[in-house]
Image 1 (cartoon, rainbow, N blue to C red):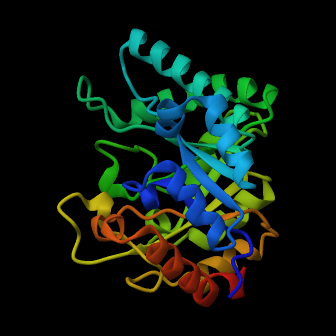
Image 2: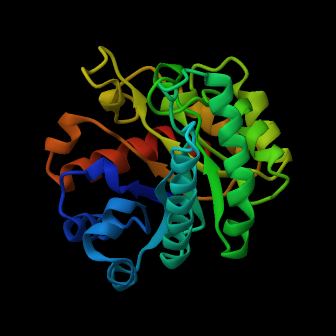
Length: 278
């Protein structure tokens, strides 16, 4: 069973201690991990880099930056400063890309168009800083049901509009199957991302029903839900994308599963549903 190009996202093992997560990843022959800024906060940037290096692993991405939609100037300034720190952390871990969840509607004005404009302006300001540090910014469109509180960017085309408006090659997108599988223009948008050299990351997990009380936790193992992974993976592969394929699952049942069992299931489903089409 091949785990070639497979990366385990840390939040798939959210309740597993960090060191156990790294050791589990290695024990299944997986060579990379997607980390979160909470990991940096927990052990420190240098210590985290040492742990990853000592395990012989690579970092496929750091999550997350973003939350750039505030209408108040003081809040926008603070968000930019925090994102610069996130970029520095990404570079410090040797990760190629920082995933951006752009932020939801600001209830102070409830102006979703204005919020998208503020995101566009902020990413244009952050992209040169990222480029100087050898980091790319992967804008993540989220399913429209998260527009209010997490991301006013709902489609890959919207994310690409923002990336291209920056005028900087460091701004691009991540394709996360959970969030974009429903988009009737997905294949065209993936092709557009590739043509602009702005497809920086590919993340996979399934869409489960019924939705959990916290819909974000309705992600599942590939094959448990409604997403056609062979088709979407072929769309990505057709662009020439050869990067890591991250499995990012937020699910209470998965978190309650022993890490070794969860990693085994992920590797099996990946080998069956994703890798043959990648």
